[in-house]
Image 1: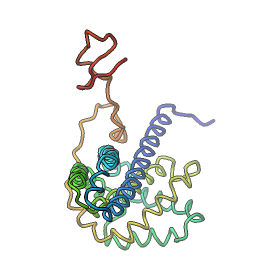
Image 2: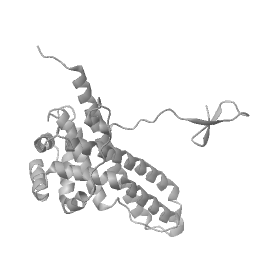
Image 3: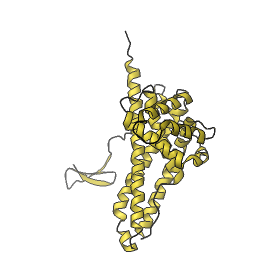
Image 4: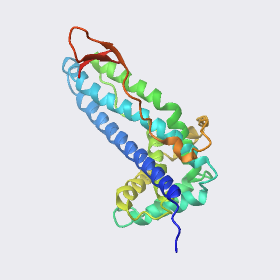
Length: 274
């Protein structure tokens, strides 16, 4: 009779859920970056006075991207620490990547095994797992700078100028590899078997491997130059994988009550009606 450990099962689900959140957030940011780039290319053809009118709709897009950058910085920290822990070996990472490749084999035009081998040989002595750790480090230390670059470009648009789109090339490469790492994390916690999440994760992960091989192998040295991740002080009962649990804010703090209009309060400097 098989004995089921409820605690272990709960921890595995929690880790899988966090990996899914990280994977989805990376895909979302990449999609928003593609939209941002396309929009900036489009408005570059407009007269400056017309271009300035695009400031407000584009500011909403920048706000969404900034939120995404903050989120993936958080996930990069946790995933990087998890990969660097002794619980995840190079063999585990490679086997999970191959498992994802097998799942995606019938759904993409490029041969996954060939892509994975191109990645391994292109890294020139750096293991895929170590490259993913470097990518996590780079995202963690540079996400805030990227958000600043976005806001600076938005200011240019407000002045009628025409900045170029895109996150910086090295950062985009790091985010791409972070997405691969999140997908691999899902395969590892399911024992390398991607039955339930096969196509939803496997195809984007292997596609990202191809994108990284095509455009990013030359930036590995830059990724490697990022400082190591700071190690959080965790309570004794906290598992390393829990380090990248999403931040859940506490209840809103009411900092003012309108005495003349009952039911109207100020939260974070903004007046709202309850």
